[in-house]
Amino acid sequence: GAVVSQHPSWVICKSGTSVKIECRSLDFQATTMFWYRQFPKQSLMLMATSNEGSKATYEQGVEKDKFLINHASLTLSTLTVTSAHPEDSSFYICSAADDSQQFFGPGTRLTVL
Amino acid sequence: QKEVEQNSGPLSVPEGAIASLNCTYSDRVSQSFFWYRQYSGKSPELIMSIYSNGDKEDGRFTAQLNKASQYVSLLIRDSQPSDSATYLCAVDLGGSYIPTFGRGTSLIVHP
Image 1: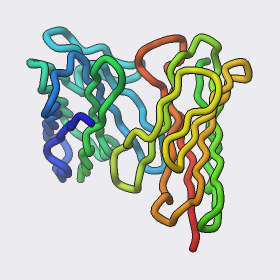
Image 2: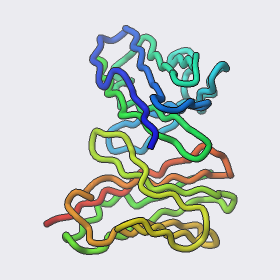
Image 3: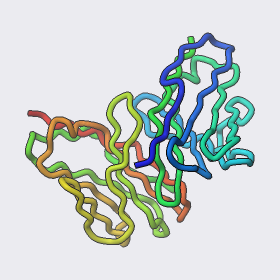
Image 4: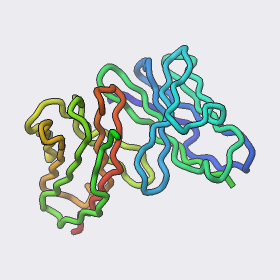
């Protein structure tokens, strides 16, 4: 199957700082990438859908000014958590889609102190 | 409200038994159905996809789809301790190409 990478795999930051997470499709071009968040013992919650070269589409309740998404190329999307707070601590997972299915990245564990 | 429902479990089965995981969804328009396995602290990995009514088998896994009753299930034969994980059902509700995930069912296979 296709490979999707995320970097970093984990990050610890102080409250008020910004954190950038990268998502790359390594062996295929992904016109669409998705960003999910998963709290402990909860399901994946879609945050936004990102299409290359256009603005991301955010799900209801997700603040677009807090979670900045950039999809500058067919193989790279970034999520920046701005002014992070402890309640933003979560497992952030990206996925990249081809014509038939989504391929998930390994996830990024964010801890905000 | 469009939803994908799963029993959170845990479902506990002995090694070698058949594990049966169920999922119901809220609308009749859905066309694509997926089962993912997620180990603790890891991201989901796709096990099976199914698009037509009936059974689809892949090794020890069988997905069953009944669109009229709006449920999809996953059977795991000869369960192994390594199958212990959370199993997520995903459905393209409303025909959207973006799947909606259920909360997942925790499976424990004990030796």
